[in-house]
Length: 107
Image (cartoon, one colour):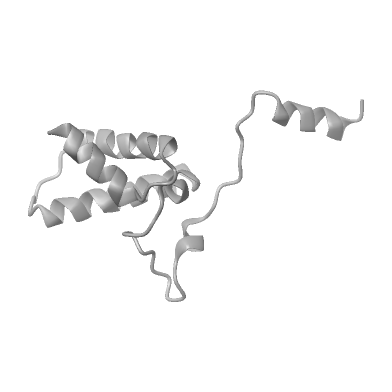
């Protein structure tokens, strides 16, 4: 069996590898991402480091809206991870909707 065929089969059997999309693909002409419109599919379809940065930004945004001025790092990391996991299960939702669901379930 030729090497290329062998590799293609390796990827198709039990692999969930997929191309990652740079977050700049969701930016407007000025480089800004509309965070209120960003879908979960975009969040989970990017590199892990970029997804982490985006969820950190959302965490800060929500804390600012709530006028909370302290950070609990381990709790924030856990919450950010929960958002990514929830978004993987609900790629059609907006990220802000996913966060809203998680915050309501937290109470």
